[in-house]
Image (tube, rainbow, N blue to C red; front, side):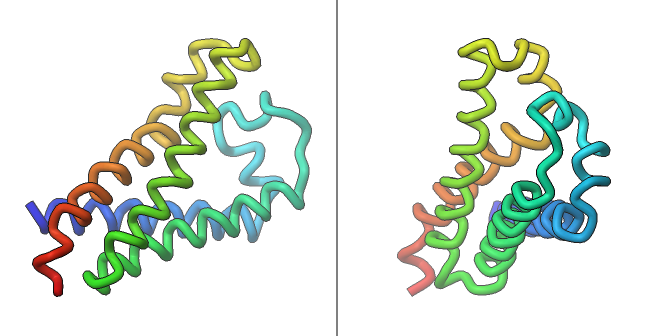
Length: 133
């Protein structure tokens, strides 16, 4: 089980870092490449790069936790908190009518699934924290 958890953390980390780098290096291309983003408002290079920095931090947290078991609970927990807030915000946008329900399906692979996986591995790390000391 721990290999699966580490694999998930590494995949989440690499995906978040890649997304963050894309957002920082080419914000306009990122804006037009990601399905649904153009429906959320006009392009704002500063905003895209700000969020790119967050994704770099989230990715680094997953990779740090994978490499340093003693920091795993805090690193993965922090990443899970941000990803969960991001997913809840997307759900809220549908609930209040900003986006249609189809946005939930469209966003699931890149927004909700990473949050669910992050919560799962953070809970796993917390439940195995004593064995790391």
